[in-house]
Amino acid sequence: MLSGQATRVARATVRNCFSSPVQATRSYAVASSAAFSAVPSNHAHKVVVIGGGAAGLSVSHQLLRSGQFSQGDIAVIDPSTWHHYQPGWTLVGGGLKDKNDLRKPLAKLIDPKLKFHNDAVATFNPGDNSVTLRSGDKVMYEQLIVAPGIHVKYDSIKGLPEALADEAGLVSTIYGYDTCDKLARSVNQLKRGTAIFTQPSGIVKCAGAPQKAMWLAYDKWARAGLLRRGDRDASPIKISFATGLPVMFGVPKYSAKLEDLRRQRGVEGLFQHDLVEINGNEAVFAAPGGEKVTRHFDLLHAVPKMGPHQFVAQSPLANEVGLVDVDDATMQHKKYPNVWSLGDASSLPTSKTAAAITSQAPILVSNIMQMIDAKGKPLASYDGYTSCPITTSYGKVLLAEFVYGGKPKETFGKWIGIDQATPRRPFYYLKKDFFPWVYYKFMMKGQWAGPNGFNTRI
Ligand SMILES: Cc1cc2nc3c(=O)[nH]c(=O)nc-3n(C[C@H](O)[C@H](O)[C@H](O)COP(=O)(O)OP(=O)(O)OC[C@H]3O[C@@H](n4cnc5c(N)ncnc54)[C@H](O)[C@@H]3O)c2cc1C
Image (cartoon, rainbow, N blue to C red; front, side, top):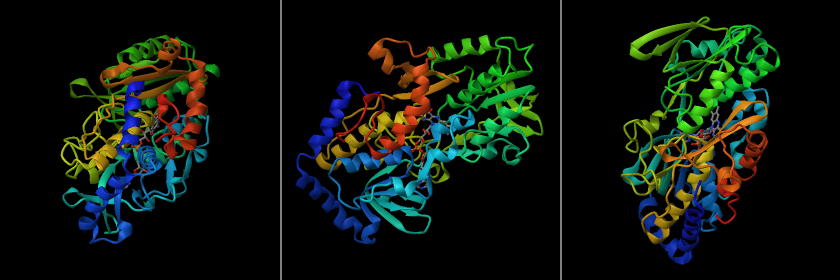
């Protein structure tokens, strides 16, 4: 979350840097005339945004709302037909939402004043301020915002694609539109046996989501009498959580609470166990010391490894792990000052969530405006805010909110003095109803700044 002061700085910067619109227009025009003459005018833009996901749409509409850009000045490049509200896939896995209600045609979410290139970026050419599309077309930019998210690597687990495609089997993942509803069906089908829920080591979108899926399944089975709370041996269904991490969650405060819950509920913890193979009803894990551990399952919720897209990882913009190499505070590229990144594709060392983007986008917009108009240094600074609403049962959510270094920064703790590590009913309704609503109604239009509320000024 931005502090009140940082928010004011960010907003003031946006206002100030456009105190002289004439000057701003002139700075664009100088750069435009020389560099852009070689490409068609609808392929040359003041700002090009790669990706029309949570980050790309937030930031492009916030830029537009500054009032300083004309028709076609800003372009969004994305090959997709659909935009998905991915945080809702956990709710689909829990049988709480219909996945069709969580996606919208991407073209309809993009303001007509933005130019939409419905194509994929194939390569970056930061030397001449352009990107090349899959079609072969070149698109020129003065400022580039890179937000194509990350890639879910289904083939990182041997046998997973085949197991997911088998409609009769009880192997699923909430990490994809096609398979998120299979978890709800599988949970309803299982009446007895072993259920394993996995989480990989490495980069994961919303690192709490793998266990959210588990806790909802736990609660459903417990309510159906298939699980005796805390008495694993007497339960018809036995649950194991196999995670590549050494702990339940990356932030000690919330991890301690979730570890207590795991023990109370009789869920087996297989720590530092990374799922590598599915073979029939056997799951094979890479365990500490190079050991391979094989476990029988009757139901498996598998989370594949994730990583940067190849076109980013192989580009000059990438850091050593393939993410866009930006400054942790300003989101400006470390080598190319007119390149920026936010969201999952960025190197920002925080948990990859849509909630993080609500904090990142206004700061990035503020800084890019500062660069465009005043040609000054970026001023606003991102503190790493991110959030993870962990469904611990039907009706309760633990609302983790933290900044860089795993330091809790709790909105409701600050406002009304409550401890957000305690699962609560109001947080459940935030997760289930409010966040999906505010996402499409305001965030995708550039009007929602997360804990800072409605972002009506930028
Ligand atoms: C199961 C699950 C649960 C989650 N739970 C939560 C939660 O509870 N709370 C929360 O805040 N977050 C949650 N998240 C994380 C959140 O959805 C992501 O962090 C967020 O969507 C990232 O936004 P993004 O714009 O960076 O990437 P995305 O939203 O993934 O968008 C990337 C866009 O880039 C486009 N693209 C890809 N390749 C190219 C290319 N070559 N050229 C141009 N465009 C390209 C894609 O088509 C896509 O539209 C969850 C995610 C999942 C999967």
